[in-house]
Length: 583
Figure 1 (tube, rainbow, N blue to C red):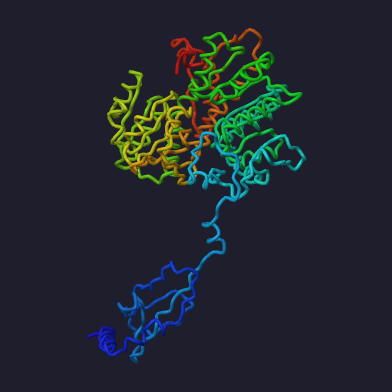
Figure 2: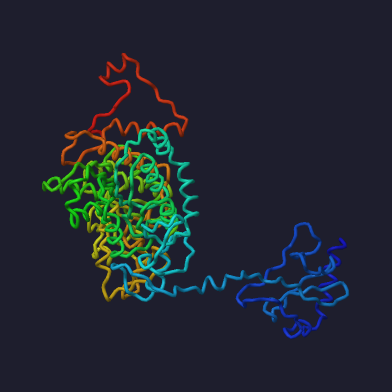
C-alpha cells in the first residue's frame, strides 16, 4: 500500500473523533466580504498534487497530507484535517467588488427628456427610455439637445447633437471607416483638385453613422457645403455626430429623437437665413416631403434629388406620375451597385447581428418567416438558412416567389404559419404587412422586427391600446404583453433593425455612398436639358465605375476584351457592359 493511501486512511479514521463543535459558525473567523450573495470560491485541485487542498495565493497552506472535509451541518463549510488530528478551516478568498459596480446597476435616469410621440406610456418604458442613448454614450444627462447651447472648439454653434465632448471618439470611428471605404477615398483623391461640387449646397437626410461621415467629408472635399439631419430616430451614432459638428458640419441629429425632434431637425437643416440648398440627398423621402410641404419655392433653385431607399423612390414615382415632381431625381436604390451589394450582402450579415445584439437568440431550429423576397429578403433568408433556421417566405411577385422556391424555401401565406413561427421579419417596403390580427395570433415570445426602410410594415400603432402593456427590456427591445400573459418581443418599435440595433458592414456602404456621390456630381454638373422633371436610373457606366473602384481591395484583375471580341458583342471595350434596363 502506498504511503499516500495509508496517510489518507489514517486521517479519515482520525476525522471521526473530531468534535463537530470545532467547526461551528461561532468558531469560524469572519470572511471579508461586501455582498452576501457572492459565492465563496471553491478550492482548486492542482493536477499531480498529493493533496486536494491547493488554493489561490496569499493563504497559508496546510501540510501536504492534510485532508479536506465538508460538514453537512455547516452548509457546505470546508475544513482541513492535519496529521495531528487538529482541524483548520479552509482559508477563504476575499471577494472583489469594483467601486462603481453597485452604482452602475442601481443607476436610474434622473431627468426625462422629450418622449417619442409614438411611444408607450407604460411606467416600465418610461423609466428605461434613457437606454436609447448611443451605445458608446456613457453620459447620464437626459436633457434634450434642443435645450442645450453647445459650441465646438472654433466657437461655431450651428448644430444640435447629444454631446460635443464625444468628438474624439467619433473621429476614431470615422478613421476606422475610411479604411473600409476605398472607393470614396479614391474618389476624394482623384477629384479633389477639380472640385466638381464647387458651389453645391447639399442638404441631406440619411443615417448618421461613421460611413455617412466619410461621405459628407468627401462631398466637402469635392467643394460642397453640407447640412445634415437623420432619417431614422434610432440610427444616429452620437459620437460621430459630435465629430462632424467639431469638424464644422451643421448636423442636427441624436439617437432617441422624438417624432417632434425628427421634424424639427429637418427644418433646422433646411430653414437657414441666407442659405438655400441646391441639391437634396435623401433616404426615405422625408426631407423631400418636408420641403414640398413647407418650402415649395426652394425647388426653383434645386437642381436635383438623389434618393436611395425603396420608400423614397416610390414617393418620387408617385410625384412624377401626378405631375408634381419639380426637378430631376436620381433613383440610386435601383442601381445595380445598390441592389446587388447593399441590399443583398449588407442585410445578409446585419440581420444576424441585429437579432443577436437585441435578443441573444439561437437561430438553429428556429422557425422564421421572412415577408418579401427581394434583395433584402434574399440576404436575410440566406443568412438564417445557413444558421440552421427553418425559413418560410411570403411574396406577392410570382418571379420572386419562384426564386424563393428554387432556393429551397417554402412559400406560404402569413396566416398559414403565424401561430407557429418564432421570428417574423418584414422586408417589403410596403405598409400593414403584419397587422394586429397577426400580432394577436402569434405564439408567446415571438420576435417581430423590420428590415425594410419604412416603419409602416408592422402595425405598431394598433398595439398602443389600453389592454396591452408595454415593457422596456433593453435599448430597442420591448415586450408587448396581452391580458392573458402572452408577450411578443418587438425590436426598434418596428423601425429598421440593423441600423437601429446594430451596425452594417462598412465596405458595402462604401459602394452605396460612392454611388450617391457620383449621382450628385452627375445631376449638379449636367447641362440644362439632359434631365427633365422625372426619375432616372444611374447610368450603367457609373455603376461599373463604382464597382471597379472597389476591385483593388481584393487584388482583383479584370480581363479585357480584344477588339475582335468587342466587335462580336457589339460593345465598347471599356463598357458599359450591361444595358440600362439591367438590374
